[in-house]
Every structure is written in C-alpha cells, then in structure tokens.
Image (cartoon, rainbow, N blue to C red; front, top):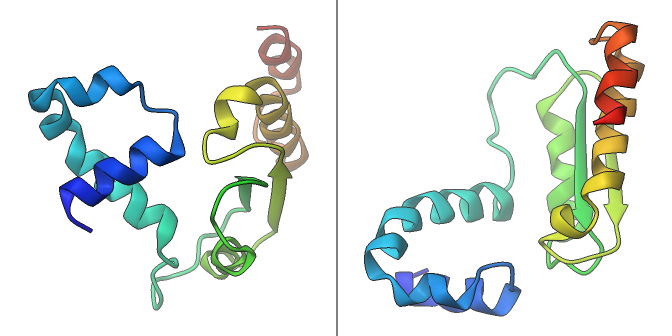
Length: 126
C-alpha cells in the first residue's frame, strides 16, 4: 500500500496519536518501521526456512482484523510447541491488557523452564 493508504490504516486502527501525523519528518522516520511491522503481521511466515527449535506463542486481539488462519500459520515456523491465545481488544490489545499478557508470557517462560525459579517472583512483582 502507498504511504497515504498506510497512514489511513494507522488512523483507522487507533493507537497512533493524531498529532503524530502533524510532523512529516517523524512520519517519514517511522514509516519504514511501520511498513515492516505490517508486512510481518499481515503476511504469512516465510516458507522454506529451517524451523525454530523453541516454542512459539502467538497472542492476538479478538477484534483485530487478523484471521485465525493467518495467525495459525505461525505454527509452521517451529518444531516445538505452538499456542494461539486471544485477548479481548483490537490490534493494540497489548496496551489495554499489558498485565494479562505479561502474566501469560511469564507462565510460558516458567513452563519452558528458561528462567531460574527465583526470577519468576521478582518479575511478577514488578
């Protein structure tokens, strides 16, 4: 999509302060990053690459426009555990559900046994 179309999508989805668009140099600076984010999120995972030897856990907002098949396609990037967890919210559910998402990530790390046990309480308390 063109830069103008991408700006329209950003405005429609919310999460981007309207003032952001009042600063063309800032928009120009972030446009490549935002475009890359959209390409990653909107596209299917690359085919033909070696699978990851670690679990992959995908989180998504129930009101986002990502399809279940788009999200479930990420299961093909790993030869380990895959999960898809839904949160109430849109594309920016991360902001409104930061605590719940953090708890889910900590639980996944704990289940994978990648952090020393003493760190769980410290992370959960912060």
